[in-house]
Length: 83
Image 1 (tube, rainbow, N blue to C red):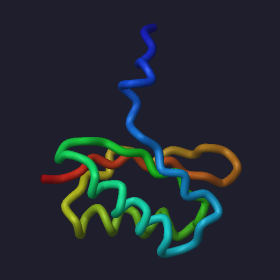
Image 2: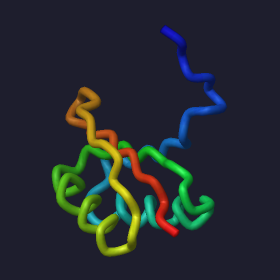
Image 3: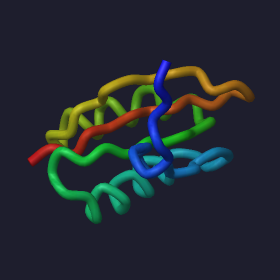
Image 4: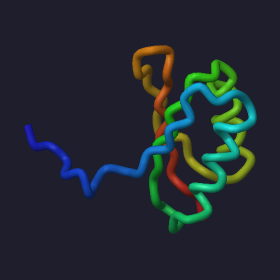
């Protein structure tokens, strides 16, 4: 099995231990620096992120690619920036 090179991995925003609305605000800021189609990972422990992140993506035209459990109560959201 071939592993992705670190350069191919999307940037990650660490929003652990931040509460609503800070994870989404950090995501919004980071997306501003990406080209359309670029991906980013948001890692958050706030339970409301499970609701807030998909809602933000839908409202702003971004694609929520996946959500995965990350241990320690964290969720990893992979988001693709919309055009």
